[in-house]
Length: 195
Length: 159
Image (cartoon, rainbow over all chains, first blue to last red; front, side):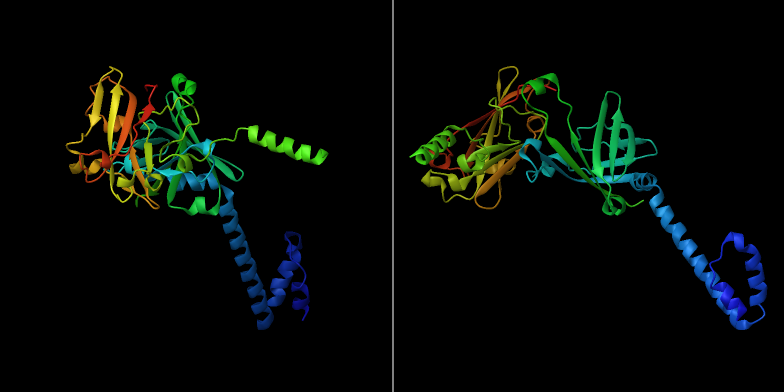
């Protein structure tokens, strides 16, 4: 009876004396020992679950980097004029995605677009980088003289998805600027190849 | 009397205010994408060029029953010469020039001009202008199979 009363009290590290006493006390009856072990198991389970959740929420950047590494195959390309607003995307896969599959490979630091017949307004080799800030992130493709940054919103879908989608807009030349050209945005969509 | 004058003034001002032209499809049987609001009608030769024909707006009676159309494309190079993709003689046997039918009588043709003319233009010659005409297929070698009009697009910049 005494042991039950003590176990109802919350246990802390400071109560180690009590814990020691409780353990000794508990072993005196089978019923008390069973209850004590049950509570220990419950505490252990709660601790494990809490640690697991902590790990999942700890570093989304690391998680996304791991998901991106590998080979991706180009599926479709759409284009749109930002001046016209959303809903004006035009599917141009038939001329942008070549007959040969186009593969984008993310290594530890480098990216490589394997030579194919698809059209990419992106240097075929360079470095890549992911940055996460709060609920948004950016994927950068960097090569000498060029940097394309594509921003995205971080959601559960992004983190679990097997598809990669980025938007790029060409850097306009002086001539393009003078004619109001170069603002078209291209949306590239890839799916991951099995490893 | 004063309120009537106010209504008249508001109406007059509304009529004078120019509205932006945001409905190319409703006005023209042919339009291109990307849509540029600039008057120079300029495009880039190494980017996709999408060309639409709305046959439902066709006024020529001989074409109203047609359900297959093809394009003939000519370009003017930076050397001032003209280059052609296909010709009227071979038009019926060139499926790569057929427009793709969409819904509601809309037809679409998409190309990257630089890629399409890669084997036709000499090296170092850039596309400066592109002229598109539309024909009903099978082409009958007569005016009744030709869509009236030739559409001109400029390519002022080289990359």
